[in-house]
Length: 482
Image (cartoon, rainbow, N blue to C red; front, side, top):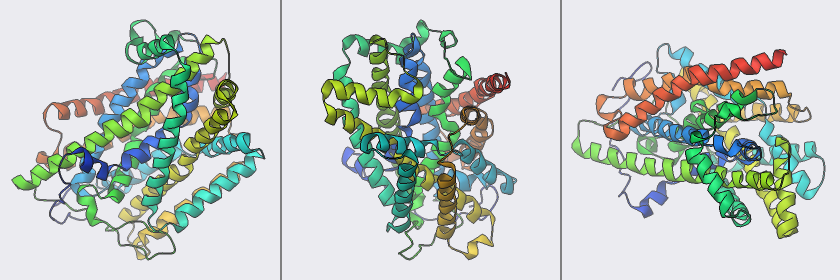
């Protein structure tokens, strides 16, 4: 079957996902855990609780809820393309005319968001606080360990999934402390802010003492969850490794000590006119939606953000004014003083892991995205293995991390990086919509009530990028020029 530019998709049988039972659902859980663990980072553990430590800040968190709902719709939309073809978002972008343009644009837009490895330094700072020592040395050591893990694991995906699962479980245990420490009044404030805050609080009325002002706060709440298709693009990379749908016909990225597996330059598809195949297709969609909404959105994003925000309200109630960068340290010291040193140290450890998982997860995903685009567009590149390009870019990333670690990230660069998240969606949302609603056959496009909501979510996300995203970048630039 021919879709867009590039090789045709050979028709094969759609693998059977099994019944839509909870036990079988657990068999396919993995990509949602990886992305859910990645989602627990700077915004959830630092920025959001800091906002909630400001008067009225909790009542802006409904914007985060909106962003999460739109993010979930984006994930399920991107998933349809990968289940139907086995191709990732980045490979699919190379099929949109002109293919030489949109694949690289999608990759560059993603990479610029993660250009400065701030999460690596945050992980180093957490472990230095816990164990003592130099932050830079800790950061270098953690980077090296992550690199070696990816370099010598038998199957890269399996080690990433196992590590992220451990991080998610340990972080879940750590945030229980917030649940214990917060009383009914704080729980009530948080619930109101996340769901009904828009009734009482204009987000632009909250004073935010940082460059970028209120627009930065609104942009962060919405676009940190949308992460302009970056995370949904990452999700399709991990889906293929897990074997969702037609992805089961692809090989896997192996460590250097093992033989490289063959990864096709094109995807595959199935007979979408066959009733039995469509029945399997619908089961794949249902299983994937469970993973997206239950594992990624609810567990990985909403619950963690909500519980971290309880800590911000606790600081507000205590009258403590803490800079955003000091939020994790302050929380750790506070809980350590109240519940014992071990509790405080355990918190530092899990915070460090939640930042460190980005060293492994983000580096892995960006390297896969690079390999996807190079593999799709360059015949010359295909004279080497897919794995070669994956490790080539991974090595480049590690070198960049090592070089930049001793330098403090300029506030201006951080602000511009954050603001670019919203604007990047102007290009990336239409690519995702075109992949799922134009390139795919009619039978595999969004259907029914859920399909209508999914398409509306993509359109709304695009409009937000063109309005809030542009305004956020503009206000940031104005503030930087003062």
